[in-house]
Image (cartoon, rainbow, N blue to C red; front, side, top):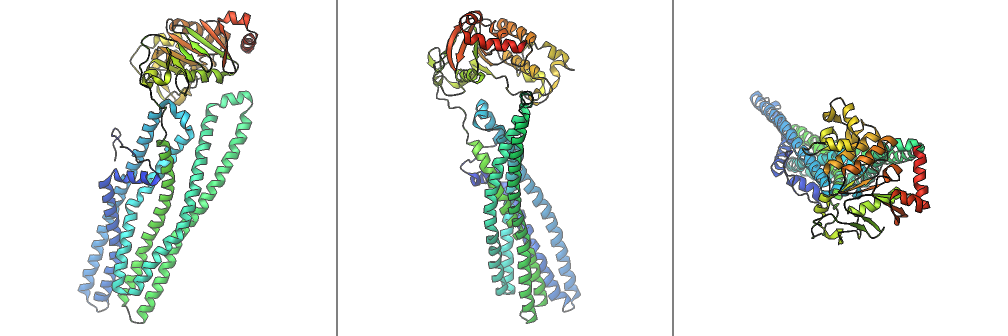
Length: 563
């Protein structure tokens, strides 16, 4: 199987079928071994009725006990060897499936890392979760066709050849009957593929809503919107359930036909063989052999139907993986270097200018407008923004990421010790913890910085998580820090301390925050007041309170909330 640290290779993303074939080509030795073991196992299943026929015709019927004993010993030896082959086939195919599983996980995780910050802008969290939870397993199961699927074809041809030696009529019935069964099941597999695709898509949407609901439950509850979201989720889940029933209905027909039709076919062939035996055209031993051959064929046919079912689902899952792997990160056509010294960031669309070495606050009645401005200034969305007069699009993206940090107040926090969550490098976090007023958080944890954090730090309160995110941003010590609502979940006393210490900690560095809190605005060197996403006024907090009625009304509402 692929090693945890081994390069999984470059996947073929030209389609679902090509991706499945790439998984097979990545492990050629194991795939060939699975096909050989599966074929040998199924062919030797057909050897059982052949040996039984010989034991009857050459030993039991003429009364030759030595011949009977010899054929019985051969039957036991073949059965024992086939049991060992079955074990090895199962082990090999398990390794094939696990390799496909792990390899798909690695390429999906690698793609998620490659997309980086663009991931959330390219696809929903539910889509990634659905791929990781369901699609990976489905793809791995589809590779069963490599072993038993190939073996079923070989066994089918072998049994047909054996039947020719017994009766050309029976051989013709088998050769024509088995493909007819597969053709009857085919339309149901096509329907299953379509129903499964729609089900997977709806499942991804619903999973995304679960993630959104879990992340914003407190806010929704406070705004009285929990009931509305619950009703919407209920409706979506009912639709998903109905689609699941449709998938199950098609699946039940596929599985029923996969068992029922081969059994019916077995009855027809047995009836024909019995008539031929009664007419003396075949011996009793050959009659037993024919019954055994056709009984053996029930297995390959069932495998064909099962493989068709697994492949239909596997192609749907592979297409979802391919669609995810085809997503591209933010395009980087930059060829120029970042400015060698602190410079002005300018967003022509809004008129915002972030002066170097100062703490700038952006205030707007709609927080999304100011967040959008920072997105453009950090080059997370295409824009005409400039840095030192140079368009951001012309600067190499790695250099922008190195010098400009966009700190979202809802940025992800990974599970692990708090020290690893906030640091990511060997440095002393004491100053950053002090600046973010997070010392009480560390002191309140049982093991301090070594205390384990849940995913998204759910074992902390909303205000504590916000301060931990600020600690992490300050420890990164970027040349330009763009922080979106860094104090929105804090009480007034803590917020005032954070505002004061943030100004001190970032003195001489370029910092921009979005906020409408007067406690933060009062510590800003410059306040930019935006209306409908456009710069309306610039000044200090006190100047804007005096000169701008709209700004005064905006900040006053915020002050009323704090009272």
